[in-house]
Length: 390
Image (cartoon, rainbow, N blue to C red; front, side, top):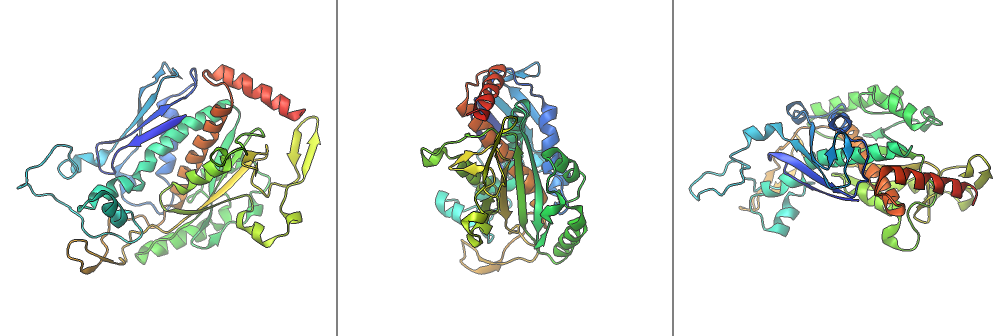
């Protein structure tokens, strides 16, 4: 499978085209809209989330609630476009027309300056409109389609926040809980946290940070249950599924690190305390005594849950602006404010969940005959039976 997205933050709409979905898969706008709503939630979001009420239109590739096998096109309209038609209009303007809100002052931590240098834009709005995290709206929509496919195959995925501004969850609080059980807790939590005992500390810190004109980051975790072993490949670097998932996590705006299982803790332990011992029984086939490697060995799934974490830096646009340089005058200044989220970690966890869902679904589609959903299900079940008795 593959997809492309298009659209600017304050343009008329965001668009995605997905190619390669199996035919006969149930898909409705409601399935996608539920996930878009989750992306807009979480304590610490700014005013933009009050303006945009994201919903999707499926404009091709689906008929009577099922995919056709042809490309699926998704559209999310920007409600705020009506206030930006002159600034972000498509048509040419006369030289005498005033171009409002031109930006020549790059913000530290954003794509503004580097993007301007790369593409030759003197008005840095041409950079920030596309580099904005607004684009993750349609990536969540695409991931929601992938999640629907995974659900049809009996694979569950959930994300949750594990740290905000140095306040960490206690992993023991959700140890042994299934993805569905974690989801039930997270969807009723203000910061999408699976350990409600730290929620109040996190929300208080977000409020205090906003009051101080600052921002904070954190870490999120994605768990995928039900994956068969041997998905991905060891034979070449670009076919390793954990590498693809790591790249997907790092592609999310403001993400700066990724780890699987116990991650960087492996550097502090001997091998005897890291590698997952192998077990077998006739009912479950091959399993592992632990899951320190986060469901991967040699770039392939082990059959244990995939556990991947990503770290998000604090949002770089602050009410307490940092120093920068005007690209026209070369004079120093304090960077401008373009948006007002003090913490977007909960929302970012939803984005992480959906980009991982895409990579996992895509890997399954690559490995099995998948032109039609019923045939894909049959092939997967046959493979599961084979792997248990291998």
